[in-house]
Length: 183
Image 1 (cartoon, rainbow, N blue to C red):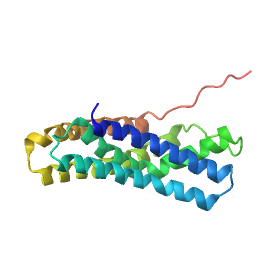
Image 2 (image 1 turned 180 degrees about the vertical axis):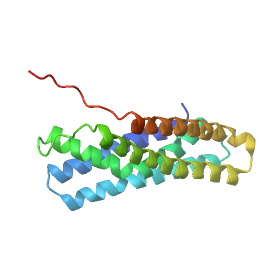
Image 3 (image 1 turned 90 degrees about the vertical axis):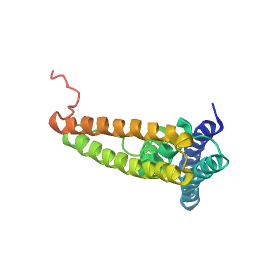
């Protein structure tokens, strides 16, 4: 695995460590303002990955799939970041602290509407990450060095089309809840 691939792994681990520390500081130590500082570190992790990826390309590296995945990671982190923190927050409160309401599984139209929101986030992530890939290709001006970035963009575009079709299917065939036995 190359340097950028390891940095993606390190940044993902750092992201979740910062989130868990922020939640622990907020709920266990009751330091809400301090926890916000930890949550604010999440975009800095993205900027670090962006800087490392840019530097690697600037040094003359040929783009690999890992460079493309770094752009995906940043796009997803920006588009889904707040919702991921909210997801972790509700589960931390319920499963770790045993407080608050149990996170409910959505069904029917609620599930469909939530999936539509997630699809819009996916489009936002694609626009952010795809723009970054396009910018790298434009700045490098060497198709031989950036060929794999196009492959990543095409694959991600195909996945986005599949996600769109699946999300549309939830409106046609809404997800039903589990059947309950009547005694």
